[in-house]
Length: 449
Picture 1 (cartoon, one colour):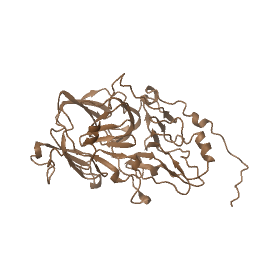
Picture 2 (cartoon, one colour):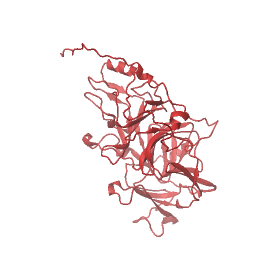
Picture 3 (tube, one colour):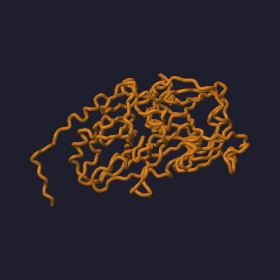
Picture 4 (cartoon, one colour):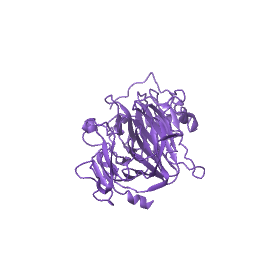
């Protein structure tokens, strides 16, 4: 474990930068002055990984050049493999507009069954279609063992991985990334990766088709704030020249299904690379919070870390929003989240602590889904307490990190999410049943001093 951490103690910082990196064991492995020389240094193969169409405007053009011992094309044909609980079938069960909440998703015990990252993928909800490159999927992963001689490749879209329990070591073609709870990592479309775990491990995944995550526009906020580009970290080149006589499996998610092919070498054989299409991680503690300092409760969009934009201005395929520790100082204000019906879908998860609007019931490792136009808001206890609380400056969400995947898609819940997982909290609606009327037709405004 210590040795692995030493290997990945250095990262490059910046969001969407043009990076270049070469494994120090092979100095000068990046070609000079061109991308595709007739003969690459060290006898390497040049391979481009494109994350955008060739003709995209320059600010949106994403690609990286990988210099590898053997090219990715050297493999046996792909064949379909079981998908388990990973799906893009949004018609398994009838639609359910109710407020939904899940207890912490169960992690399989290693003594009973070895489950790695790919085998532990389960789809909770989603919408759209990978074929038409428009939509999202929301998954959880629950696993207890590391991937061995196999890697994962998502041809459908980007994975944003949000660990909740247990750190994970992700080996990618670009290098190694160690990620722990309260950090996120984005593995973009087409990038091969393998996941090592160090015990019972759980987390959330937001998958987007047809768009990449980007930093939200700041508008009147100005040049600084929210997630700063310098705090995003990209791995440095690391390679292994390893033959696998028994076969190395490359698992490919393609059009919502899983396929696997065999090859006799490790895919993590990239000696050097350069470009702006990379995996990256971000520590949520670095988020610079903007909040109300006079009155009222600002919309949660002020807590957006990353967004995947749709073609409609201001409307996202998905936003990743967090609710970090901060100060609450608003006067004459009900400070927790307000009661709300939204034209967007809101999927929430809890990494640690207690969520301010529902201190009971919403637990770390669990989740909730408030679908389009389904009303939601503080439970009875939260409303009663905060309607009469003394409005002094106070720390909010100390020791807590909740997040939201917000989407313009109307999401369907899978059969696994509604039935198979057996973690759906069917008593969720009770938290609002004791709300009572405070209406007083004889009310008069108090005299202002």
